[in-house]
Length: 73
Image 1 (cartoon, rainbow, N blue to C red):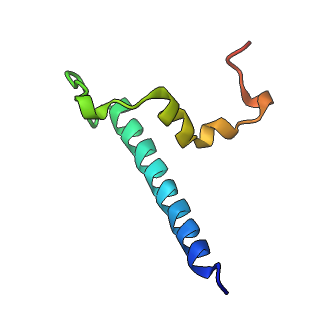
Image 2: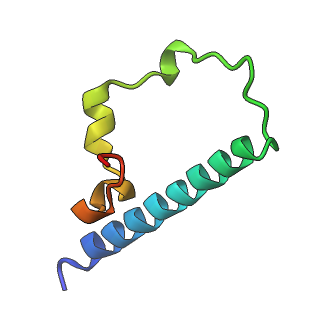
């Protein structure tokens, strides 16, 4: 099957994305619970990302149903 290598690469990419999301959630939890101190942290020039590039990355939270958004109430 010609598409097998492509399908493997797609699956591996999905796994990596999920691991990065898990890491992000763990980092957020560590900061919120005080296990990781971010006071005094300043972004370096390479830490900044253009809003358009950031939006293109997407997020699992972007897939919320319209009814799940309680911020409007």
